[in-house]
Image (cartoon, rainbow over all chains, first blue to last red; front, side):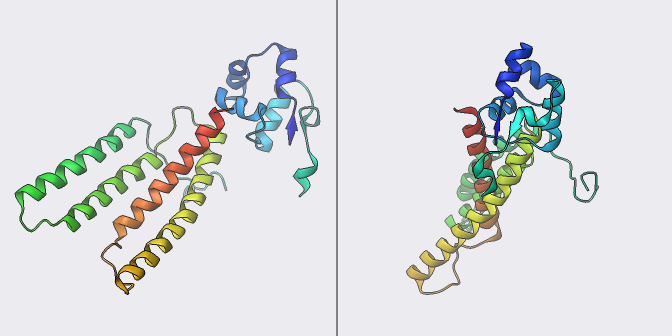
Length: 68
Length: 138
């Protein structure tokens, strides 16, 4: 699954730590999500989208290999 | 289900890691001391004592919270337990085969509950730390 967390974060002028503090996870978790190493839970994904005041689909998109 | 008191068990504070880490050298010191003081204390006993002590140390480490505990860490921990059990089975099979090859018997002195617990918890700890390493290194 790809995501635009880094782009949305830049739009809001948030650091990774700012976003981490808002959704109560570690900065490392944000880093792992942005680099695609960790796929967040539905709850966390919704929290991220809500923080960016956008929809889930705007931030997270399925890729072809997610259907395999 | 997330709030089920049977399934959801408490974890140790990160402060317990100090106790766990102190168990490793203390077990060796205790083993050497017993070896000097007691004639009946054999190298096999020393091995079992070290397996037992180190298993306890790794159990505590595996049950300690991380300083920043969040869903990614919990996900890593779940994966680590699954990976740990998988590699323990392979590890034990390897010991069975080597033991059988050397002695021609499945009844080996190598096996003990302490050895199994030690192997299991080492693999769990290694799998957890490896995931943390991968997440921290791009």
